Amino acid sequence: MTDLCQPDQVVWCDGSDAEKDALTAEAVEKGILIRLNQEKLPDCYYHRSHPNDVARVEQSTFICTETQGQAGPTNNWTAPKEMYERLYNLARNSMAGRTMYVVPYLMGPPGSPLSKVGVELTDSIYVVLSMRIMTRMGNVAWEHLGESDDFNRGLHCSLDLNPERRFIAHFPQDNTIISVGSNYGGNVLLGKKCLALRIGSYLGRNQGWLAEHMLILGVESPTGQKTFIAAAFPSACGKTNFAMLVPPERFHGWKIWTIGDDIAWMKPGADGRLYAINPEAGYFGVVPGTNFKSNPNAMTCMARDTIYTNVALTPDLDVWWEGKDGPPPNECLDWQGKPWTPASKEKAAHPNSRFAAPMTNNPALAPEVNDPEGVPISAIIFGGRRADTLPLVLQAFNWIHGVYLGATMGSEMTAAAAGTLGQVRRDPLAMLPFCGYNMGDYFSHWLKVGKSLKHPPRIFNVNWFRKDAAGKFLWPGYGENMRVLKWIVDRCHGQAEANESPLGWLPAATSFDLQGMNGFPLANFDLAQAIDRDEWRREAASQDELFGKLAGQLPPELLFQRNLLLSRL
Ligand code: GTP
Ligand code: SPV
Ligand code: MN
Image 1 (cartoon, rainbow, N blue to C red):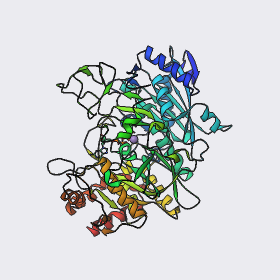
Image 2: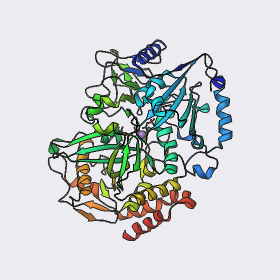
Image 3: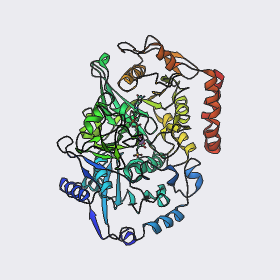
Image 4: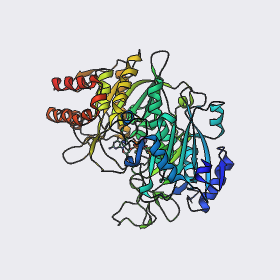
């Protein structure tokens, strides 16, 4: 790769504090990072990405398998030979005058049979410093690798950030990733979406495990019983918030522990249960809307040791964003560095502005996060962002029905990816942008894993985002989601009643706790749970588009499930 990219020098990163200090100083000197007010925000830095490079780019993301059928109709595909040639041509000499950093990193706890090693070659200091937060970077990776050559090969070349020359290409059969022309989050922190999900899902299918776009949390009851839950919501639909939930007053004595906020690797254990690890070591979280009321733990995470990207910068080198506690600053610089005042029409922070903070800053970090065996999962939750149709919570009748609920998830598009905001699209298991192989085969893999489990997790569907006729959220969300979680935990332990509906099991009035919700009109709960049969007939019909696309590879079980739904309706 040095012959190809021709860097002026090569630096092997060891992950040490001294190295971090030196790279940070260099980044500040070069204007890549701005040192924030160290009294208010110790060890925090500020970064602006190029205005055309602020989110994942799905149209430039490719799965390069031998045949197009292996990548399937939901992925962009180019033959590996052709893509290697195109990207090597772009990478050729692209690091002349620059430094190539060799970043060894470990995804998952040291010593875990589920953990994987990657090596990312990059010419971006921002990437190195972010990888140091998001992964276990440095010698720990070489130690895990030992004499093996089983590691992911990653190459990242910033180029000139021209979107025409931006490609995020995956070669699952070679365990290789090449990303060029971007310097933004999910496009370039190769351990995250590229390795942990796209390559990971491909490896998982071949090796009998699951790589999922899921948070993992532990619910501890007042008696000390711990129940672990994984939940898949599409990008910017509430995973970080749910993973760090602080229970309301009513749930005194209950405690939520975070294992992970974005990615789960899960494998059947010898006892017939499904075990999960979080492969990451940090959070790359959405900033706007985060405050001490909505997510106090995230606020604590990003109070130190954090890299902020594309938020607003105040004159005293503090950060600001829409939805932060307190009044807006009288003046500041917006995410593009332009002067901003409260009278400005544009947003000060980009809607997809992010913080990168180490998980060890999280006051609710679960002690099990470093357990090499992972945690046993009792429930899996699928959730979408839907203004209508989908109730607040329901439980699947069984695993196959649950996979059908996941496979047919619809969600409004968010700022996490370049595209049309607000448009509802099918985002199966929140993996549409992240499944590294044929989506139909992915559904089959889920059915197969379920069959292999003696004690499969119960499966649930949630929707925090249903709205009333005036366009207001029916459910207050955030900490109050504890009420939904409590019902789910109770169901897992056979302690809550449910009523059968055409869609699945719904909470019985007696089993769902609505007490102590100050100012919440109880009728809103019924509206949030309402099932409109006509809406659901339309919903089932609109699943044709995805099912038709996957035709040859779609497991028949899912078609049967849809027919059963229609007959129940
Ligand atoms: P990615 O990092 O892109 O994968 O996103 P995520 O799934 O972790 O989403 P996150 O928790 O960052 O939330 C995204 C947006 O949804 C933020 O603007 C939140 O304020 C909002 N949000 C989160 N939870 C709730 C909720 O319960 N109700 C409502 N109405 N909004 C929520
Ligand atoms: C997402 O888009 O789902 C994210 C942010 O978690 S990124 O890392 O950019 O993919
Ligand atoms: Mn995500």
